Structures are given as structure tokens and as C-alpha cells.
Figure: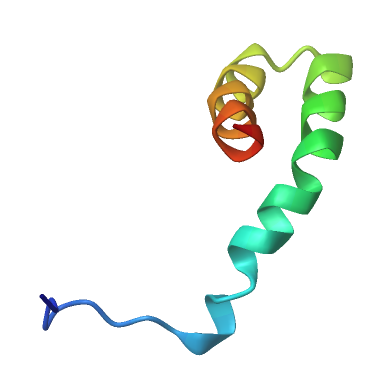
Length: 51
């Protein structure tokens, strides 16, 4: 099934790979800066990507 409303910009295709690569650095900075909300968002994403 294809959604006629879905339009993907080809420039954004590498973004999930960049996010996965950048996740450990983002987590470390969030923990260092004490950004609790950011670490709460990163934890599930990190668990999903590693599992």
C-alpha cells in the first residue's frame, strides 16, 4: 500500500544513519550538561538501534 500524501525528500535519506552514528556523542554531552529530558529521549532510541 502506498500513501499518496507521503513525499520523501531524497536529501534526508542519509539522516537515520547520521543519527545512529551521532547518538553516543549526543548521549555523552547530554549527560555531561545535565540535560535530563534529552537523555530520556536518547535512551529508547539507543536501545532500539542496538537491539
